[in-house]
Amino acid sequence: MVRGPQETPKRAAGRAAAQPADEPSAAAVAAFLRRHPDFFRVNPDLLDALALPAPKSGDGKVIDLRAAMVERLRGQVDSMTALRDEMVAAGRGNLQVQARTHEAVLALLAARSFEQLIERATGDLATILDVDVAALGVERSNPRTAEGALPPVRLGGVFQLEPGTVDGLIGPGRVTRLREATTGDPLLYGGGAGLVRSDALVRLTISRQTPPALLALGARDEGHFHPGQGTELLQFLGQVLTEQIRAWLDLPE
Image (cartoon, rainbow, N blue to C red; front, side, top):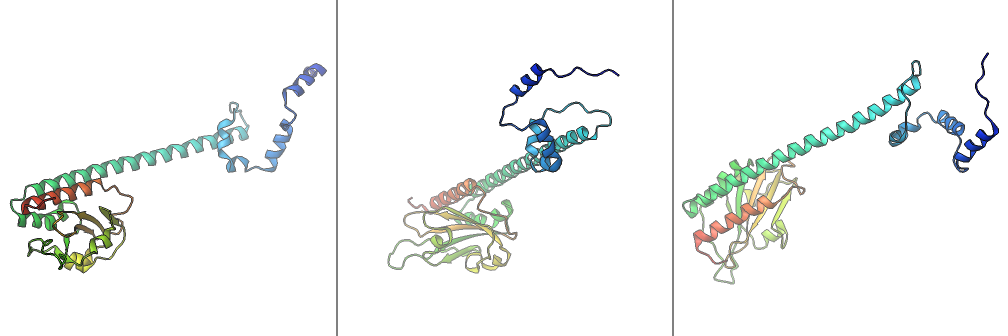
């Protein structure tokens, strides 16, 4: 029988010196892992720090540990793939919204009269922007002043609001408000109020001579609009509509 080389006192002393006194021995680590077989399941990040030997025939423990690492990497890849798909979908959605907004702006700019402008703002915009209702609300003029009234418009989709309504709905100093879940108000949406479960409100500051106004876009699906969405395109659309109304009525800013 051939025995392996015996450990010399010098080699044992060197091994002891290489292991800091405050670190557990290999035997202690092995004993801990035997008592806690789910340690790496609870602490999967530690698997990245392990230097694993090559799989050995008949050594199921090494193979299982490698399989755990592979499974963890697969999970990370799946998460990154899902994130990529979400980003791609969001990018496509943003491009679609941008294209629709540009189409809506061109429709407003192509109006050949004030009445046609209002018709497009309260009718065509709903179709172009893929919402269910589009409406304009204008506050009643202050009875104490002679100015502040817009010409009466006998068209569907234009509603008179009580003074203070725009600030009450959008908020003082705010330009837009997106409501994720709401019930359509007949005073704002008329006969289309029953369709509205989510909406976007855009303040229209037409002129210092006119009362506050707003553009309301209502959708039948809750969450169609929500506070996390960007409002730059809505503000741009509102600015274009404001400028067109001001130009057709020859009003000062």
